[in-house]
Image 1 (cartoon, rainbow, N blue to C red):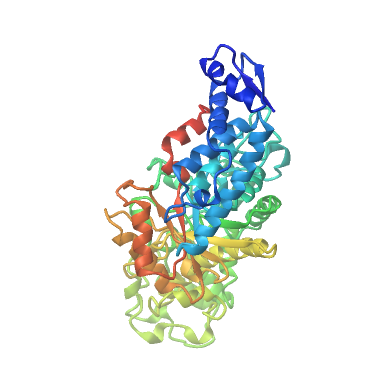
Image 2: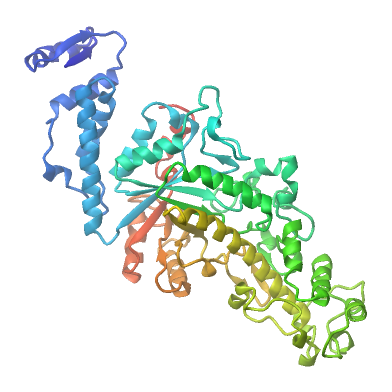
Length: 559
């Protein structure tokens, strides 16, 4: 075995005799890092073979001891210059993986996951090893690796046939595959690596593509999700930048094809699972955070409008939908004209002839849909103008909002918006599950709220209608100074979820201390366990939040 030492180092002089006794050859060097020398020498001085009993010592949350962590890091630093240290490092990785695995088997918390974003500087030699080692040290056995976010993909330039730019795009990094490296090295450490990907948020870069303008989601004012928030806040409540967002029409075939291309690239890296985030429409700012009328909905893309019109059962129903979309309401003139163009098969007393009807002249908007038609006979129910609950299943989750045509159309519009999300998620998750890989959806417990009598949370996130074959990942990020609101969010999901669904709450915070007015992760997890012992898997958002200084170093290559 050969040890390289700096002959000018006092440490070298003091240890030369000991190393020679151990049969090691001393090789002078003026360039070897003192940090590496010190790390390797500490390995020699530390007992080379720690007992299994020491390696098995872990905390209640399966975190390794400081001695174990220091020992492994010393080996990692020395491994590049010593085959002996490399072998010990590999053996230690196996021992630590086994220790965490055994701990998880005995703990109520079977899976503890962490959300991780990699940066271009993480392509430096040893960077991925250092990060993944730290995750094992903290007791994690799953990693949710962000592979598609902010309009960029964690794919090498040389193998990226998607419409999005690669995260690593500097000269010399064209073939660097951080995603594949993280999956392979994570598996070596006993970590299950999931791919974490945005779903309907394709990013700002996508909105700039000239040939993708028809793919973008639009509201009733013709705005995209980029132009609608122009001049507003730059970020949401969780620090995510609005300026990097760009949502697509879930009914658009090109949007679906582009995502299929991305998924194929993701699955070729063989992650253990795929999690879909942004399974929703954007959250509006201020008053726009509530969708209370049809023009608030992101269903005005060409593909979405065509799909909506096809929900009509006849020409009469289609004309009602077309005018409701265009104007945002129906007038007395509309009813008369449609009666003339497409006479109703039954119910000769149309709403236009009802003196109690809300319908007004062609220049006035119907402000209050509740007052539209007091007479139940004004509804043209017998002819079944459009799809019902059997044909459009999201209607089952929406209570009646009134019997007038205008109220029926509003309910139908919301169901149509929901259906677009559910179809897109269904196609993506089916692709994943056909490979025998787990799929999951991330959502806000409040994302499906009904607000007042006619309004909805603008995200229109129908998580209570997600497939039971998916993992459900509710983002339980409540802020109230204690755990009560966080636990309440988890209970909301448990109350609405069908039996048998795997629910894995995502928590925000840090270990051992409060963070952003949230209790420590330990307190959050324990209180959830106390009220919902059936929960046996939890994730933490995020690694960056737990390591702000290290994250800064990683972002700017300062390690």
